[in-house]
Image 1 (tube, helix red, strand yellow):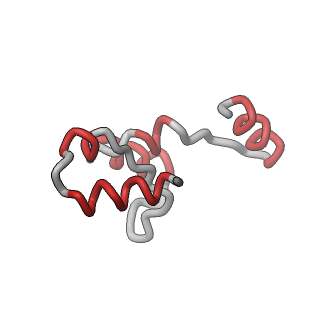
Image 2 (tube, helix red, strand yellow):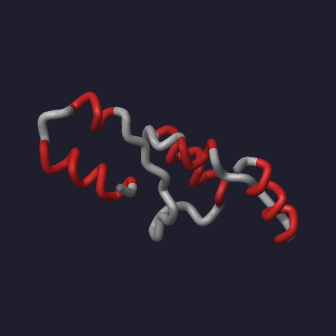
Length: 73
């Protein structure tokens, strides 16, 4: 069973607050948010969405992005 199915099941049951509270969310896009990535990450973290900042790495070249992604598994 994949993560999406597990979350859907939790939401359908509506009686397991501890399981729902254990979920995290990674904000992939913010269409009307700040264009500047550091500001975007900062505002998301202030709003309680800290995973995006935690798992986002700044890169200038594709190869550095690949190596960074590989090292963070």
